[in-house]
Image (cartoon, rainbow over all chains, first blue to last red; front, side, top):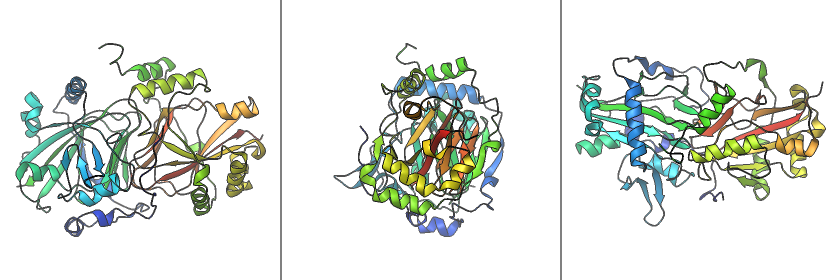
Length: 236
Length: 211
């Protein structure tokens, strides 16, 4: 049976105030969902065809099918009042306020935010060729998400929590960079908004420069997994 | 891969029907705008929360075989009450009448629908929820009014917000303003979802074509 929502829905929620002020100051953005004359689509770079994306996607999905339990999902621990990303509390992380809007104040939970994640050395023979695509990134991290049907990544601004975990450093957002490539072609129900630009009909290999400070999210209301891969690091 | 693990049933079903995203479906002739007071509609829903039907997308014994089959295949892919819950108003006649009043006569004239026999439903999808790919059966409408030339329209109520989307075949629709209206033709696969932080309010209007 459908479950009751935890809190009354609030149409006046605005995500901006939940984003760390340092990111908002360093990466000003319009923060207006109704704005039409924006340049949010300018982040598209080109299609990368030097990797066999279809083979990488098949490898990732096979790995997910073997594993069966997604590594990542968001939920709120009511008892401890902690925002949880899988088994990690993010109460001390810069994503905390945004995630609170998702899992405490809205009905996001472990049942609608799952994804499989492959990171860095877990890429096995794919790791080196993937690393080689972005020689300009220092302290590089690579992660691939397999998002099953029925799941979302709630809209957010990147705060580089994985970078913090990996390096033990608080990010210098002026130096950080993130690239994203779609590993699978667009399919039924695959949705990705980057600011006010909604992406669709993408092709495997399409490369996006995810400039900092722009609100974005994704969903899969279709029938096939949506697969994306991301590179994060410092610009040397 | 055994029959329990296989995830391709829905795609096979689409293939059997010859439905492919490679074929473009032009929806611009089906789009229009009707003037609505969206704040009044949302305010009405909030003051009538106790009358809302809360349901998720799953097989139901009273729907036609094709809809049942779609729902079974979707459930097999991982859709459940945690990602497909819909709150809707209008199943009670008095609520249907109130929603018709809020829409106004001009809306039905623009849609070329017979107002008296129209069914209007207000739908709310909260963040994290979607209605996955499906076709409409008009089952509720036909049970009540019988067969005929039936059309269904989507009407945006709340202004578009980040994370709100509607897909009609290969057309991903977003950035709507309240009153944006599009006919969803019979047999055309469509879906909708919300990965933002604000609830998504829309109307469906189903009725006989007024020649």
